[in-house]
Length: 78
Image (cartoon, rainbow, N blue to C red; front, side, top):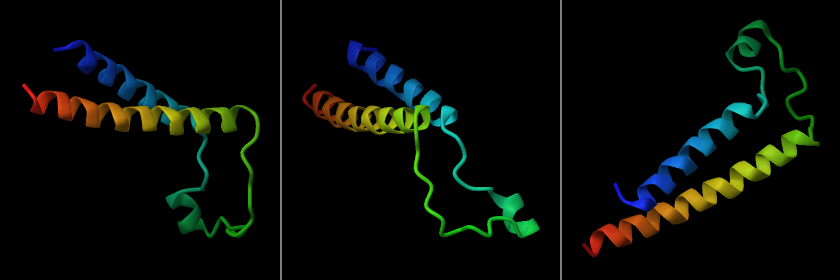
């Protein structure tokens, strides 16, 4: 494995951790069965740590996408 493979692996692990840290934005299947979620159209804004984690996830996902393209180009030239 080359150094950029390790960077891509680390980036993917960071994305997984950040996604797991994010809070659920819906009640899921249990809310659909029990009739929960009556406030479907209520806008809720992310604040504080939730917003920071959401922005970090977006940035790291962008970096992952760009790295994946660069690695594909580098591996095609070999």
